[in-house]
Image 1: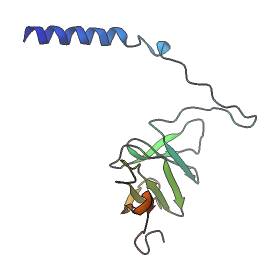
Image 2: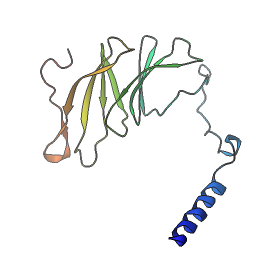
Image 3: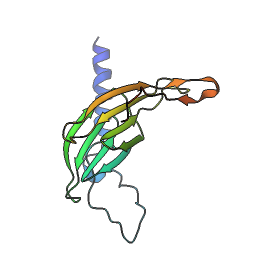
Image 4: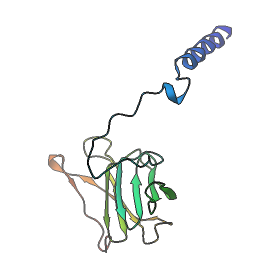
Length: 152
């Protein structure tokens, strides 16, 4: 038992020694593409894999679900709502009126993918209005057949 404790202490010491001492020791952000009419104002909070916009809101999807940012002041985006979704990430997000469509990544071979229909009529209170499983069919293609009226 003493050996296990000593081993854990050594491992912890190595991890602390290997960790950067400050944010100045972290690697710099990779260079951004440049454009004459676009410039960086700030970074948004959290993780972002997909994003779509409506009015002065950005609907950001990432590792935890959907985050709603008020971007009326682009230099200072404000997190105004969060909707946790039970998936690990996604890159597919689209808008159709007051419906945000979020598709999670498949686990493997087109299995396990789910489409979330999120009501954003009030961007401050997004909620899941439907969950549609995507089905694997012959040839490895995914066929989506939403329930009638889902996206109305």
